[in-house]
Amino acid sequence: MQTLKDKVVIITGASSGIGLAAAKAFAAEGSKLVIAARNLERLNILKAELSEKTEVICVQTDVSVEEDCENLIEQSVAKYGKIDILINNAGISMRALFKDLNLSVIKNLMDVNFWGTVYCTKYALPWILEAQGSVVGVISIAGFKGLPARTGYSASKFAVYGFLDTLRIEHLKDNLHVMIFAPGFTASSIRERALVADGTAQGATPREESKMMTAEECAKHLVNGIKKRKAQVILTFIGKLTVTLNKFFPRLVDRLEYSFMKREPDSPLK
Image (tube, rainbow, N blue to C red; front, top):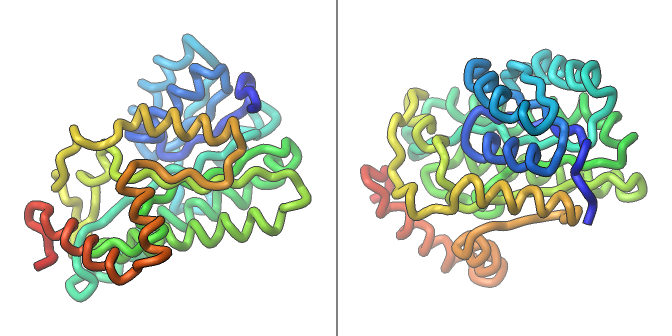
């Protein structure tokens, strides 16, 4: 198990949820941080808290913009001279049936979830290869099994899975660590910001957040997976059960998922 002390870690989507919890967890390990998100005010608040423990810089970044991702990497190298770990965490979700969906919603999700991962990884990769470090993609169980009323979300997470899985194989002889990290339902603000059919934010979560895995617990699994250089981490009992059952009984899982998701308040599923 490797130590993370003094490792340079970039975390996208660090202003809330899993990204914020991960920043605190890496700071506790003594890592040097680059925290990125669109909301600079929140990043600066987090920086003020974490600067008591370690070195931190904030870089305002919209990961759907290639130039922002390139700047994120340039600022990281300018500050620390290296990059050890990239956590591609920034992401958005949605909830609507495809037949009702404005296609701009899927494009928005692909731009953030998929292309954000591709852009950041592209510019960080030479430095991470030099460090024999880690590239991490935070996906979802929806990246293993299609989630009804989340076509754009599932498509983007499947795409990230395929991208990172291929990247790992391409660099088998380079000692590059690539980890696909799949939380199940985790308490965060992602469902409040999820897009509905017309592209506006949902505004409120349809699920009971208090019964979900906390972002802090999720971040502990993330850190541990990197320390052990795991290829894949799947979290929660339901998440693991879904992935396992789907290998053998995919049609059964289809029906179980449909039944489970239609119980959400105001679900578009009937």
